[in-house]
Length: 260
Image (cartoon, rainbow, N blue to C red; front, side, top):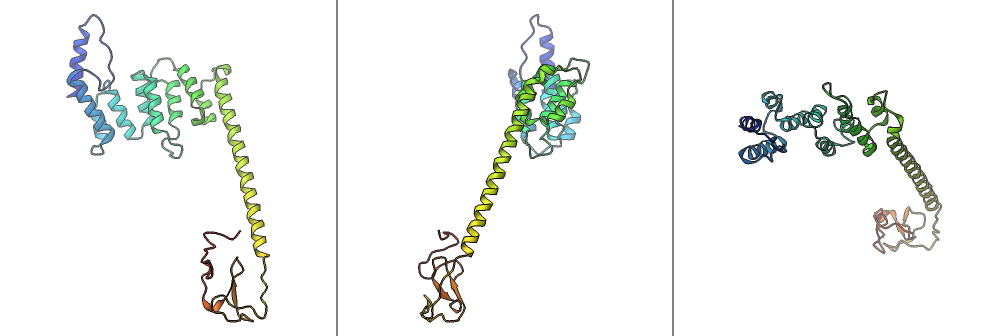
């Protein structure tokens, strides 16, 4: 299938004097591109296959995009990023992967940018670390990286000057969050004070019940009987079983529209 077609294409390219252009997976001309598009779509969207079993069938030195999709399905994000960054040499695909998966509320993907930073700086073989890409990632996505964890990954020989954009961005972000928390705390406190004041005002409200005051529902004199007073000073005998929130005279629901 796909592997056979790729081998045939590679054999054909090997005999050419001018190297053939490298195609992204699924964009190759002919039947190979069509088959890879179908395979990539299946691996990305279907839940009808065993990721472990498919992974064991894939070659180790080819079909890296397909392998990355399966590793992602298995939650092995660092290994998937290793393929994008080092085997395919495409930092853009690696960062797009992080953008798709990053979720600060999900413990499995909230450190995916940290995984990419580690992949950049700790290549799987003797190749040089991707230091410039790592510094760019730290500067661009500082709010998605734990500063302490990120600095632990950096080589001890990293010049402090090169980290200045990251430190500035991270410090500015920290100050913004701290200020926002202070403002939020002040607003909550002010709201609490306002609620307490309103509570005391309402608790101190009084109504005068004279000897001739009558119930607004039954017309009976209140006298010494138990009664209910609504916020609009309407008095109703408790024996009339009045609604706790709705005034029987005006029909106003004081729970929905409190008395000002």
